[in-house]
Image 1: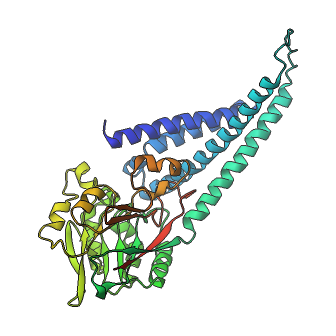
Image 2: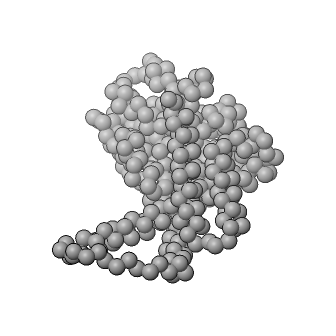
Length: 396
């Protein structure tokens, strides 16, 4: 079973069960009107189908309508997630309290307790109160997640020691931008502000480590063009992510080169001058090419003929294969892709999926930094994993 099929199956199962649960808890027990029940049910069925077929919306809908439908679908996906979490928290709390009351009853009671008279109006009132409280909590979480997604990213600044680094490059700073996902939600204004904040860090080198876009050059080029305003002494560099392969990696590579951004596709360049330099190595995405039958990740090609005595920094979108890269002499790998989980509860499980999920890790004398990313994918929200702008300072 392919990873893509498994993910699609998970979306299908989650969307179906989640919407059934929301309908039962927010509608069935609180709404009297049959017409209103049927209307809400139809909307939930429609949203389930939209979630399952979200990537195909553009194939049969006009461009403007498809974009609106995509925005609505992804926004509802996030809101629905937090509604389900809030309702589950309420139901679990009620369940624990019920079990606790039953355990406190006298064990010697020989006569059954009298059954309370069912008051339908009171039951409906309580159901509405509980549902309303959960809805308030869930929408509040979604609102915070949306604010956090569009608010300025947190700045993470770390010093990383690389013994092979020449003294002339001691203090070299690399600012990483990754997983921006320019698309329906993230547009030029977001990009201009991000570039301004990156420039304020005064980087010597800027690394854009993939998943820059979710769409084609014709649509998103004006927003991505903001990257042409990045300022760095040794230049701006880009490596592909899996979403570039979905969006068309070759046209995007050509476009970025017109912005004077160097694209490293399984190759390396020298950073520095005669007084001291290091190898900046870049590879294509680990899985993008493999899934589409096109050239992809090739670390051996990128490192071929390299002097192992020179310091090497690897730009790779996914944190995959780090141990192999370390054993081949890479001193630092800079990656993204995981978003740090982006949304709770994925933030709690991302470490079970990825050995290097977010932050700084070490293998022998080598390091890897995995950024949570500057933007977001899917629901326009971040909860439990704020976006970050990374500045890595290399020291001897």
